[in-house]
Length: 423
Image 1: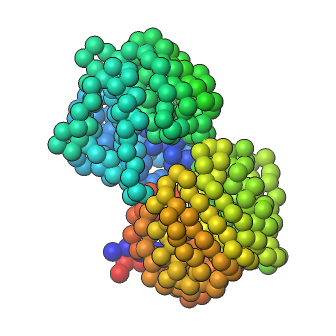
Image 2: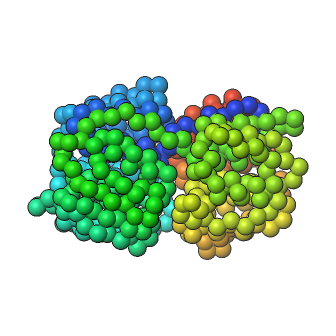
Image 3: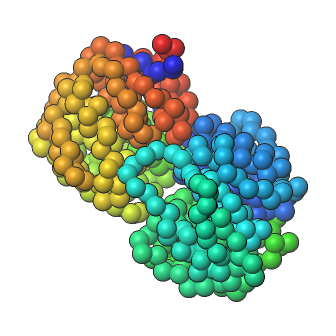
């Protein structure tokens, strides 16, 4: 079994380069099968989710090469096939193949998606959207079976909540639907704009991404073509490393988190400022220097442009080092507090009540054996290890590897002591 081991108390100094956005690329890869030829994605992070999606594409007879963070996807000879077991069950984002295959073939059979368990995460909004476009939806033998016998037709769809996954999936499905699809109350995350941008470069006709309403004018299958697209920077990875810098930068030193888009992180940066973090925001980077004392703040996650739920767990770790009592509420995933037990194990004064974490700091953390219960909880455990006395041993690190490219190398480059070990 592989684990991370982190020896704490090593001061951080240097530059961390942020990779491409995981939450974009896991939708961009399925979207590429809508092209009639070759799509080239640049700034693609080396993540287990990316490799899993490549495996799935091979089942569809799509050829891929992945070198130097450039993923080439040749869907010239893509073939329809049901995707019920195997890699499709390894990641949550496999559900984007529903929208993409439904658009291209008017049918799809996709096994139940996997990924981190953050409480119930139904995809009923996705399915309702497909049904509104004219697809029949069945759940049989552990798989979703979608079929549009007469083809998909444009429709007006209003989402009950601005779901990122549903927004993207319905947008994918509507690309070839006859007429115009209007999707209201959509999510506005930067990753959605990124995906719409690539689809438009491939020949789709999508407007409104980044606003409350997206319009998709259907185009023919033959009109779609390949393109070259650069994935936006990962704002969640960037925020995670900013927290690492805020709690770990050495006296007289600085940590620069480079290759970011600050406009994608305004709510997070505002809370970092409120907490007293000594930082300088540049055009495409944030430089963090030692802070005299972090201050307790209250945080409530929300849909973009609010504070991202994916940064709740790393930011909770920062609050364990702030003076006073902080309250952090997750309005997106109420069950996203499994890191609380692990932080308690390390000595943090923190408790969870329903969808809220209550943190009293600052706490002296001690190294312990902990578990990465999910992707972002795992990141919080790594950050905790950076400032804990002794050695922290982190189990189930496959969760972390789903979302952080070369995390050991990046942290080691700025002075952290972290390594893999077989136990």
